[in-house]
Image (cartoon, rainbow, N blue to C red; front, side):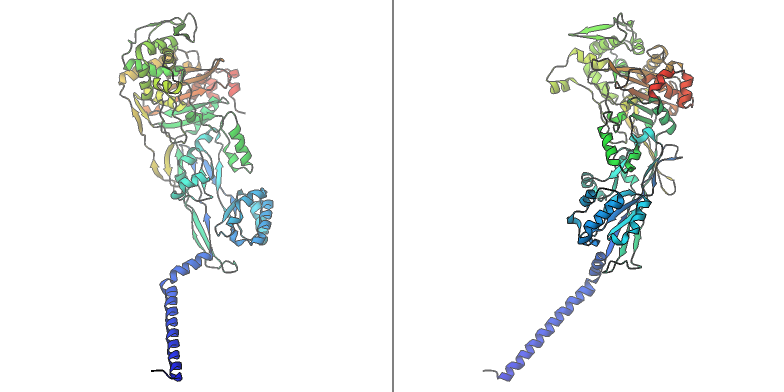
Length: 621
């Protein structure tokens, strides 16, 4: 049966109506989904497109010495200049870059590298310059109409007191590198962040950096700010750090070392607190706020005296005769030789095809026992002691017992562990057997032995404490930046507790006292100090065969303290790069006198009657 023509037309109309209704329903459902079911999602997306978010940098925490009176490091207001690339019309970008380079007085190529074409569609701001002065910001503001997409904001920079030799401890900051960002991105670090690069700034960056804030503004299609559309999350300032450093003792140690390449460490043995740490040459942290920072930093890197190196923890030196403290303890602990037994020193000894000499030359010290050998620093006695009574394995074991060859764990980055040579190492390294001359060398602190000034201080601290070494630390307290209240105090942590008997350490302390009263330093100012009784040991490390020596002195005082908390350890090394003047004992004398007599450098020097000609080389300009 066939439909008439008018029936076919009616059917077509019905089909079209059904299709129209279906399409209408589908569009209605879709619009309902967009506007109701997913309305908030798309609204947020639309707002994000029309919003600009700027990160507000927090102020880093301040750094104080142990007195918590005057800060060593604070912040000063400065500005950064940034560009939001998407707001700059592409045809105007070259002109904007040219104007910025002129106003900011920086290389145009530098801005072009930071604003390559690949970022032109970015909404995120790109930092162009930091540490910009208010005068420069005023110039930018005057030309704002011709600088689309350019903005500026306050960004604090570090301001330093006259910290001198504290530069190695405090360290410097800089922009986060690509490698650092790869490691730290999951910890919340972002491109353009400021991060600690060395010292305490690096060690405690997470505490010091604070928490960044945000400023968000809403704009219309023409780029105008919509009033009432701004939101602000304020930044949180970083924590304040209080160091163990005593500023008075630091200055005293700095002046005592003078302009001599070397290091001084002053340690409180009962807690591990570092009261002073000097490494010369140091550097001026102010260069990192300089407009010519790049060239000045390159000069530091290329300086052959390596001023960026913290010699207290990053340089290893032969311990020389200061190592005889350890040898004495080992001999007593092992009952390797009777303390009263004498060994004859004729000024030299022949071992294999080598001749080892005592520092006094011929005819030598004559017959000396253990205490006399330490006081007189007799090489021949300790050579025989190491060769015939202790042996290399015992020497190696006691070296490690005293912490040599291991990190001290101080809270500063890039510490070196020093080195303890062994027969196994020599065979692997040189394919040679360990010989008697090697044992003799390490017995008197020469050869491949390497210790840092801090490790030397720890060795003396172990003797002073009767067998306990505490982990050295620089951080004393963490404080709230707003209220100043203590949020955390750093408690002493035992690094190592020796199994050597207390009586052994008591004897070693007596012998170290004998070094000062009747030994190698009896003709130095150390012998004349009345403010505190000192016990210590000199060391003279020969470098090569050119009559060049490092000068060591490591000591503690008071010898018999009323309270352990008043005792300090001083470790000084003056490198062979300086003219030879055996300065380490003299520097130590100035420090001990200044600390225990509560004197300045000038007063200590005057009290100790140190000749003017000896001070000239070390005087600061």
